[in-house]
Length: 251
Ligand code: ADP
Ligand code: MG
Ligand code: MG
Image 1 (cartoon, protein in one colour):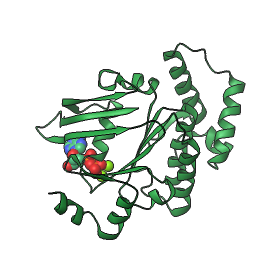
Image 2 (cartoon, protein in one colour; image 1 turned 180 degrees about the vertical axis):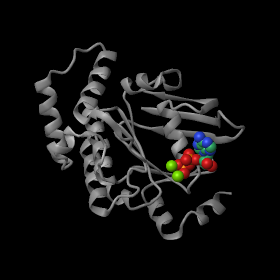
Image 3 (cartoon, protein in one colour; image 1 turned 135 degrees about the vertical axis):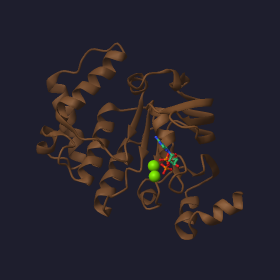
Image 4 (tube, helix red, strand yellow; image 1 turned 120 degrees about the horizontal axis):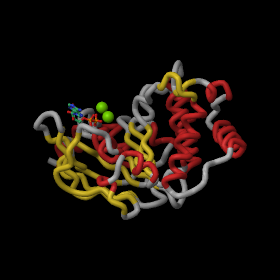
């Protein structure tokens, strides 16, 4: 599904190397988690995969289902099946939540040579998906994320994800700033989307999200590299001992 090989990334603005050789394969049907101290390059990895400006890939590759992601425009990456849920979802005043999602779905369909979704089908789909995430009709009518609480924004991101049915979902600290109930809703939403044909990369600073979204593989990232990979027990080890032990051990 997602195959990252020896990825090296610099900042565009200044001479600074952020990712220093990341190699990672997320198989279809699996959930991989990336944990690691602040500033280790976790968000940079997700930005580079989604095609955000400001970064230069100096070495390595990233493919999704065999397609070279790094050659594609951000919207082409989305059409290819990549979805990124942000740590800080943006507010878009003046754009209704429903309009936003319908436009995104139709853009994806167009890129795939499919016809637009009908208004009735869209409404049915969005209501059904919103229900599981406890998103009410009022929230759907408001401008994207404007005036939403932290928990509502994150749930709205998962709703967008559920609507677009991506092949590969990347969640960058979707749990940050959430209370336990909101985090459980987000985790339930993700778990409902787990599927044989879909891969997940869950980036989190804390272990608690991984109690609810049980990963198949856990990677520890530090200073732009994956320094250790293991099973879910690795997340527990971090929770109990912090990163210091793992980092000195690997060094
Ligand atoms: P993490 O998500 O693991 O906390 P980030 O990817 O956000 O780490 O950041 C990795 C490093 O790169 C940090 O030292 C951060 O300050 C730096 N960095 C990332 N993006 C930029 C940027 N646009 N400008 C300056 N520094 C950046
Ligand atoms: Mg950070
Ligand atoms: Mg980050």
